[in-house]
Amino acid sequence: MPPPQQLPAVVSPSLLASLRDNAQLPAHAWYVVAGVTLSAINRPEEIPKILTSAIEHGVGPKESGPPAHAEQLRIARKLREGLIKSLAVVGMPKTINALYALKEATPASLLDEPSVAAPSARPAEVYSTPTAEILQRGQTYFEQVYGKVSERVMGQMDSSGTEDLGVVARLLYGYVLSNESVLTATETSFVMLAGLIPQDVNPQLKGHLRGALNSGATIEEVRAAREVVIRICEAAGMTRLDPDAGHGWGWREDVENV
Image (cartoon, rainbow, N blue to C red; front, top):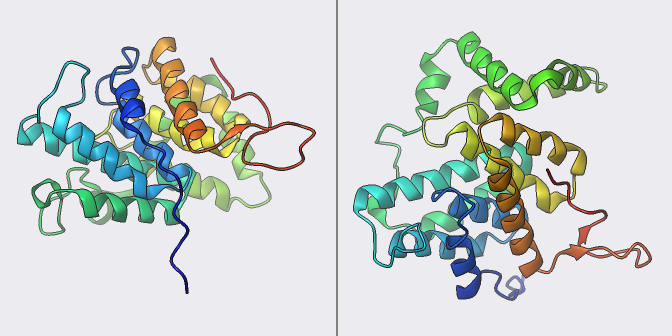
């Protein structure tokens, strides 16, 4: 089998600089948003550039040298956690490829091996915490994201033709998304935006744009995160599709906004 086709680079030095210099985004958001977006568009080989930039130059526009080891570890863990949480909307195969690509570029001292307690504490939650407790945490988080329409949204999933859709949603919100050991609720909301925007799924994106506000993000931060995702997608070749073209890679309508 021939090797996979080499695609043009997405992440350029100028793009990295624009992400880092985005004053509207919280300092630790840009690299998580960028990594998840690259996973969503199936460009995992570009994710190491994001990590390398963050751990070599820091996360803020005025930083120029490598941050302390503890800060580098925090960056690596947040990026990994963003990819883990994105599987709820991006899917397991892309998440696997993204994490493998990231591991190849991560210094050994910044990896969390199985012999060390996971910073997310998920293994302990799976094996030691009562399931009802985790599911209740997920329900609380779900209600925070969707606000007054949360009951209707979950009811629609329960009535989708199979109750299993609602079951899977409850498991994901309980065990994956509501865990705030590494990423806050606000940071998690940016993960969801980064995973949804490239997929041209405005109905789901609309709910999570509002969910980001419900989770503590400002309108300016949400708009900035949206713009970062679109900028990366466009750098990879996505575009607003011409309705007369009949095919292409991009968005069939304007990306939902707040």
